[in-house]
Length: 312
Image 1 (cartoon, one colour):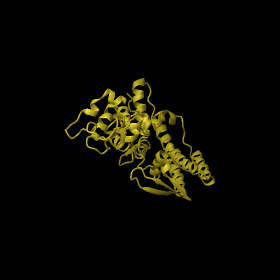
Image 2 (cartoon, helix red, strand yellow; image 1 turned 90 degrees about the horizontal axis):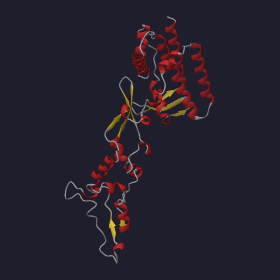
Image 3 (cartoon, rainbow, N blue to C red; image 1 turned 30 degrees about the vertical axis):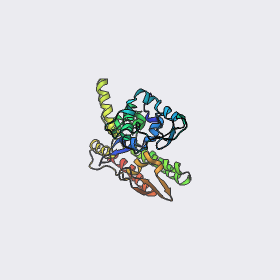
Image 4 (cartoon, one colour; image 1 turned 180 degrees about the vertical axis):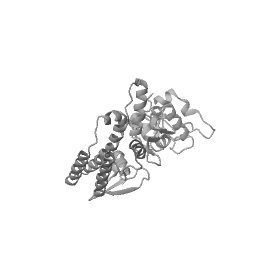
């Protein structure tokens, strides 16, 4: 008997974001998936119900011969009450010249007792239920899965912050945005401008972390994993770590972080008209807009502030 494979249907995930903008990961409401994607799930399991149709004897035999009912015949017969017998009390035509001409009226989906039967079928076929959070989701449904494929700590240890290079890259990206007519390329360039600025902050954090000598591999892995978790955490968490390491009271502002998060995960829900980019805020679910020129002014200012800290 076929078991449920989440890859056979399109699963919509939700984002779990804390008040300080830390992204915990994705959530899947499996009960909602069961309810609103029932037909897709049944089709993926090769199970069919001809709801409300008139079927002949051959169709009825084909229905009850499905593998799920051959292995679990009680699905069609077990009832919680005498009124719950949707597949035993199906009406049929009283006038027919032969048994093969008899037509049976199949139950409607909304008939009493059907919900229980569908739920039992989903349980048997291992369709998840309840709410699943990031750590318990399949890798392809996780928020962080693709970003955990590499070690950010090791990557940024090999990098050096250069204000001249940062400003040069931002200026080049800004020019390409203005020169390009392709909407997806423009949005991708805007996302990359924010990503390289965020990475600059991470480089400064990593280069300031003191090295620890004579540490065994086990504890080294624990330390690296902890640092990687910080680097993948909220922007506010990164700023706090930056202030701690550089002994400063403030960190450069990042007013564009909600735009960055939206483009990183729902770039298709954004649009560009002239100098304005509209996007769906992942926290409020509201449509918002941002001036592209203002964004790059903020990015230039952000990187200049990072450079000022180095030169203190």
